[in-house]
Length: 332
Image (cartoon, rainbow, N blue to C red; front, side):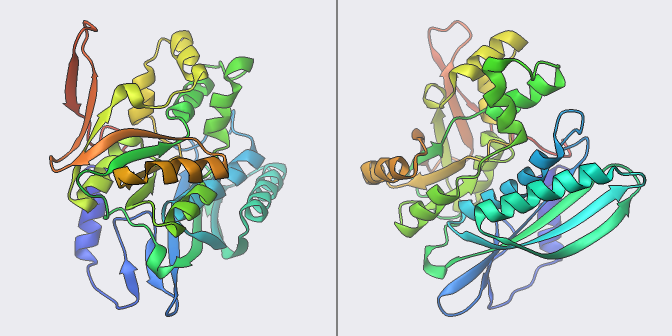
């Protein structure tokens, strides 16, 4: 079973309803009514050694920050503000106390940076590597929460920042090229991502985003989820996808493909959102005010799937291919 099939099965078998649960499985966060004005946003992520991180190149302090940042990215995708953090930490026998102290300092600094408080959790012994699970509670005005289900045919698809950097950075680490000075930004995109918290809040507060999510499993897979939730499809122009100059340099160095990193690499933790085409200038102004570049890369329509338009092999024409769910999948 693929990851989405497992999620669908769990959602079906654990089905139920509550008037306080405003949005459940299928979004970046569960949305739970807090009072007549605010909602709780609840998200959880797990990082497993040798799946999500490798201690040979991932410093403990940066890992502590990253485990907070990737959860904060989910809060950002809903337009919210983080409030409380809960940590479950599995450590193998004979763990290094100095590693644990550095990790804890990184986590604590990240909580301070993003304005949230570590409020509890659990510590257990792991029979293998380190296992880190973080749950974050955020909040947002109930009428401003942005779900994945609001995209409309004719909306413009926007993405923040540049794509593919984290995937390239991971590949540089794997191949022992992480010390290349000109490519250090790519490595740090993998080791130390920055969630777009303020951009997500501002888009939500201004009502600019009809639907939004963060890019954790790659543009191809994450957009497929958004399209299913919204009942639309999307057509992406490969030439519009934002890439850094260092990404192209890394592709030449490693003999890899920039486009694959950008659409399927994962761990960008940028925001992808749908907006009405007539809100272009307001979106650009908002992004400029928070110092985060945004790029229009596609159009939502009524055809199902995520379709990428790119040059053909001869380079003289264009082809359109369905790339739905071609990003990261734990069980593919």
